[in-house]
Amino acid sequence: MRILPRIPLYSAAVAMATAGSILLTGAPALAEPPVASGDDISPCETGEGNSQALTARDWAGDFIGLDEAHRFNKGKTAEGDPVTIAVIDSGVSADREDLFGTRIKSGWDAWDPDSDGSCDAYFHGTAVAGIAAGAPQGEQFVGVAPDADILPLRAFKGDEGADESSSDLVAELIDYAVEQGADVINVSIALPDTEALKTAVANAVAANVVIVAATGNENLYMDDPAVVEDPEKAKFYPANYPEVIAVGAHNQDGNFYLQTNYGENLDLIAPGQNVVVPLPGGGWLVQEGTSFATPYVAGAAALLKAEFGDEASPAWIEHRLTTTALHPPNDFNIYQGYGVLNVGKAVSTPLAQGEDVTATSFADDPADDGSSAEPEAEPSSIGAIDVDYDPLAFEKAVAWSSVGGAIVLITLVLVLRTIIPKGRKRGWRPGSRKPEKTVPSKELEGAA
Image 1 (cartoon, rainbow, N blue to C red):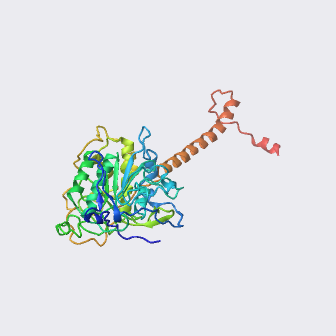
Image 2 (cartoon, helix red, strand yellow):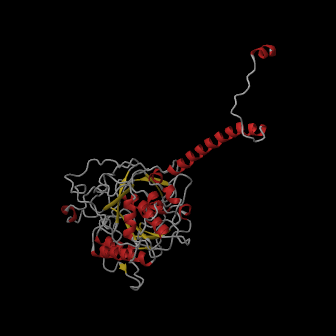
Image 3 (cartoon, one colour):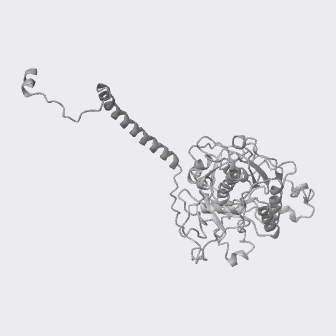
């Protein structure tokens, strides 16, 4: 079972540099993305699977409090309409009906004009979608928003390298996702900064669509000028845009995944090591990286949209997720952001009096107390966040309440067994405080 140590840095449009290789279709109202033509077409055939079966309960769902969240919402609005998560990736395999049923919508494939994104020749997009919205598989696996719809947008074919043309393609796919009614957009791709990508993100947020993105796995400080100005290194967008929910990774103990790119715009860390993901052709795989941490947060954003209404703003959802997270010391640092995702608390916490889910700004930027200062050197180790969340707290409370109630009931029964016969014997008249008559010693002698 192979574990990929790094997030693939994809270029979905290498051939775009060749004149005439990409056909732009559609009127501006539809904003259809480009699709390959001629020799650049890469027909999508379902990626391979394996025989690996689920054998143990997935630790990540327990870690983020998924059971508690699902008591409130699983991805549908109060009216019963599913929210939509757009997955810009390698496509999502509709062949995994066990995971997605009929919840995969017709999307877009930039490489195959005969496909609609519901085919995954690689595995990455299906893995991401499974985490975000996969249906329950016994007690071994369940996606964060298992009732949500998936809008698949195929931006790359395999493990290509990222360049500016791929950033511009993803920008067009973001525009397309917004026009297709996406509520949340998951981008588990680390890309260079371009004006087209920056504009698409800004427009999506203005349209009230949440964008969640992976920071990438190069262990880079995203605010280092030397890194930002190096086009070969500065591939951590759209995550490093302030309006995007930027996600890093952690392991089963809450320890920071040391490959995570970090900085001031990192918002949260989520499960991203030894996480179980589905393969397009069937079976399962263990993976690691910020790619796979991101859909946990995207799924959480979808639950918030479903629970609190589609008018909930990207800024409010980011605020809700960061304020309900399990915080590191000083509440924020550049390695762990505001802490570990706690979707149970995010969904279950009632709105405060006067809280406005449509708010577009919050005064909760990292405090200038040195906790987010530029690091002197790259981290060799980051302390784990003290994760005291108990995913079984509700069950335990109910169990202990039941035990307490049973004890009270048993005590009451024992007391009544003594009181009732005596009361009946007296005809329910008040009892006497006189001591019972003692038997003389002579009578005792005769009784023998």
